Length: 75
Image 1: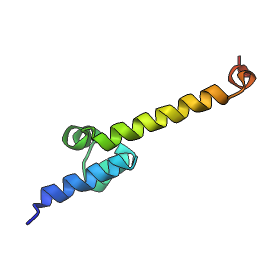
Image 2: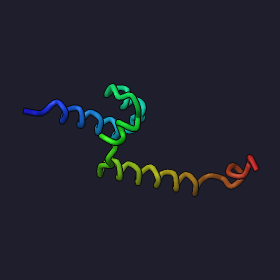
Image 3: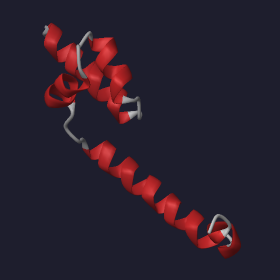
Image 4: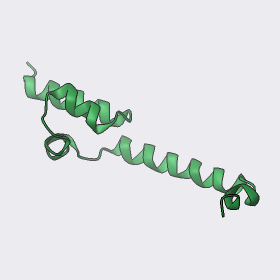
């Protein structure tokens, strides 16, 4: 049998892993503040680390291929 808290924890973790905003997760759990949500469910999973590394790699690739004039247009 799976405890209710275990299902709640899985729900929060899966939402975080798919990139759902902490405010949205907090509201879905009925917390008054995002601080409570982060303290209870804000751990980093291997999947989150992998997703972060992949996103960062994509950012680096985009920065390398972006024209220099586009990066300095506002200056």
